[in-house]
Image 1 (cartoon, rainbow, N blue to C red):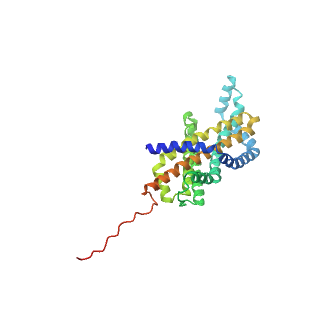
Image 2: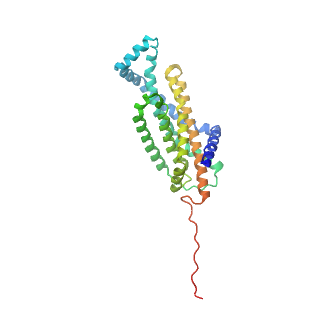
Image 3: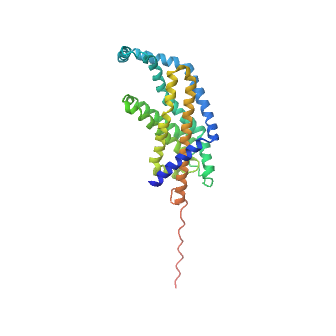
Length: 288
């Protein structure tokens, strides 16, 4: 337990330091450009339609109408104008997070894992237990499960504490599934990967949950862009870039932790995939 805790903290600080490297910051630009282009394109074509649709649903609800009348009576009628943009933003945010995670996993994680391995584990044998196709299928399957979990949990978001708990937990689980697989795909054999995931699952899931909560922070910028339309074009790209850096940090954290765990497993000489220990061959019996 103590060794895993030390590894958890050590890999955290190493990942944080690596995020300040110019190489990592430059690598984050390509996912940023892709995500910003996609977001602005969809916003240009569908933002007004989405707002009209949400406003139509709100105006058709007697409960919301009563709420608006009460807000107007206390002098808070301005909330009516921002409610529809807020709903659209919070509905789109999980999709932006999921897409950012997948883009980082595909475009940045292999390079980040290679960077960590070259600097700290240059002698670690590459057994290539996970192919690019396997990684892609694993990521897509995990993403579909996360989307289902998000959709099923939406009614629970109306309970105030749960909206602060459930989405980051789901994003953290998805981050753990995607990043842990990719961090080990190149260097670990399949049995080694399964053994590391079995031994270190609580700590790897903890990394995912922590970065899941870090990933919730850019939502404040994203929401601010909806409240202040003039700043929308500026704040949304900044929020997406922060998402990209958070997931890059997550990838580095998983890489440092997973490769160190793999090195320890091989040093033990008893992990799956380790060469079998040669047994002494008995000498033939010779009669006296």
